[in-house]
Amino acid sequence: MSLDVPVPDPPELASIDPNEYEDADVAGDAEYRRDEIEALLREGAWTDAFEEWAATSDLDEADWAIVRDLGLVSRFDFFWDDFADRVGYHAPGLPEDWRERDLHPDLDSWGTVSGINAGLTELGQIVCETLKQEYIDWEADYDAPDDLPEFDD
Image (cartoon, rainbow, N blue to C red):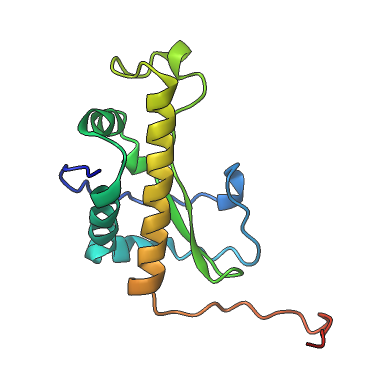
């Protein structure tokens, strides 16, 4: 399947401690390099990742219209996780109480909600992979403590 929509603008990254997210656990120092990541997204990483994701996305244009109308793309967060030497992310999603909140007139099934949430998670993962493989040339600064045990092979 393929999603044929214009590439949206990349998200502007806020200064949020990633450990505040339920789906993220970041160890080590609090240098998340968001300014650098945001610059890389604008320099092409976002477009590259979005186009790769859209080429195989299970979302259709109606699903994407909901994402667009609710401004979900702007709520992505990407940050450097120095301890793990990776780009971490938080994907926005639709809440469990979407029906009670009457979030969008075209949002009418759990299938649509879970499809959108899964699709946005996949997009976030592809963005992270694209950043790390194609755009980021810095190395992790984390130094392991000297008192870690040594294991024989």
